[in-house]
Amino acid sequence: MIGNAPFFVVGVLFMMALVGIFMSRNLIKIAIAVTILGSSVNLFLVSLGYRAGGSVPIHFLAGEGEVMVLPTPQAMTLTAIVIALAVTALLLSLIMHVWRHYGTIDVDEVRRLRG
Image (tube, rainbow, N blue to C red):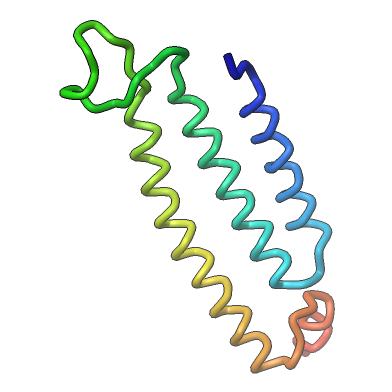
């Protein structure tokens, strides 16, 4: 029914994030790109657990012999969301410390000021 569309979206998001990480010189843009990268991985995990015609992965809600979607990728995605939140908070706090110490969030400028 949905075909390969989620995997195409995962690829587009992943490539956008990589371009943002490697081409941007602004630390906040890099942090946003890392967050997009995490979101693409989460979408990939959820897409792997999809089954056509599947019901919710709760046994007492599903009928006898009914196909359910895989619950393991959903649990992994919830864990990945929590980890991504912690990573984003750490990145933003590090960016704040760089701003306070160097007065800039430009990567090239911070490298030049390193001394």
